[in-house]
Image 1 (cartoon, rainbow, N blue to C red):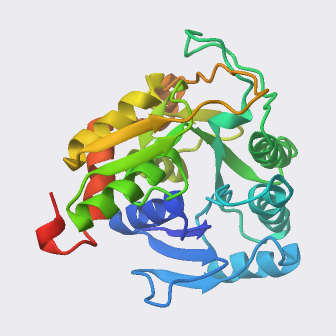
Image 2 (cartoon, rainbow, N blue to C red; image 1 turned 30 degrees about the vertical axis):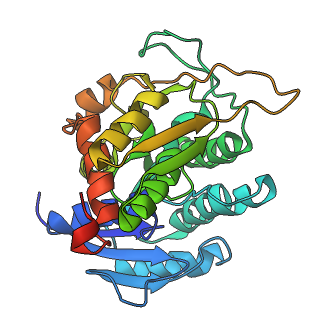
Length: 317
């Protein structure tokens, strides 16, 4: 398949940046829509638009003028947001994109990026292929689920041609600084720049989660823009529930920075929750021809290399 036009909504976020880069590397003509566009510019076209506040008819006009073959909805950041702010980030932009595509003269394919947190908490050891109910406990999960449900409803109605990719925990170069590994890498980079040891304070590292390299996620999105799969929810992950403690230890090892990790006690009265999740990678393999190519060490190494690249040469390890 030759070069195509693709609009990436939310293309300046952590996942969106990698998706845009992967599409451009395939020769696609990429247009990024985002609330803010970096002043230094991007290596592809970009427009500053807040789709959460834009009228659907106005956004439909943008799509019709662009005539894209595909639209990727990479909106839905959660970091530094209160529960009350999450719908404006995770739900309303998707409603706007979906409503706009229902009004367009063109009919691009929509690839919506969901989250594994849209599902109910799984018991440890649950089979990866088991059907998991969508009854999320967190506000973020509920906001993302509402977005996914809107996309699927429009697809069932025949007004949108869409596929949902339900992403596992994403890690790799440019990880948000307020995420678990983002907080750790900030401390490690600071210590490396000062040529001293690091101390990292974290909540108890009990969780087991499915982590996948953001560059592999971007490749899954590229595949989804090209395959004629409609109305499906496809998990994107490695299919492994990995102890988060092992990821933290791996990052410290890769950095070479002597580090003390302090796990803070639970808050008084808090209830210990079993945090365990993985996705079934089989449908992504069968429907998209996708499978993760990078190891978790590749992901963690890429995270560290990107973070430490901003340090003077003498401080890099």
